Picture: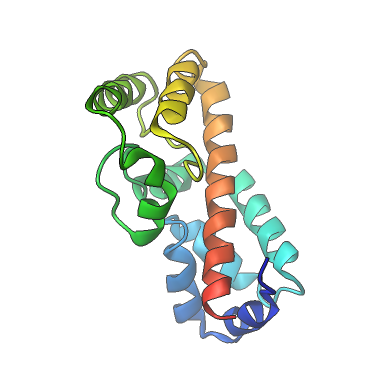
Length: 167
């Protein structure tokens, strides 16, 4: 893995506004971005990632909803290069799998009131569909915990990529 300490130093040296915008590009929750910026400087990449996990754990539901709003539905056209990389396994999926994902997305949103969020990196469309089908059996409280866990994984990937850009 790339040494990201130069990237961390660059992040810590940014103005508050620039750092906020950079973090907001990783996770669209304003409260998440604000908290990470306020926590600077970070002694290590792991400290930054640990802080990101801790902030996410205590985000109120409204902020979690803001974070979810920044993600496209699985199988839909990605809104960012990061989403496109993360959902690369869906790109060549068969029409039947894409249709099943779209139907599953609708069922999930009807059941839980928000998009199906999963860390899609390295997963095929079929795997994402199987996870979606399994998660539809969760109760709302369990699913909210799963969503936070998946968002934490995505945030870690995106924060590492951000730091790598500056290394």
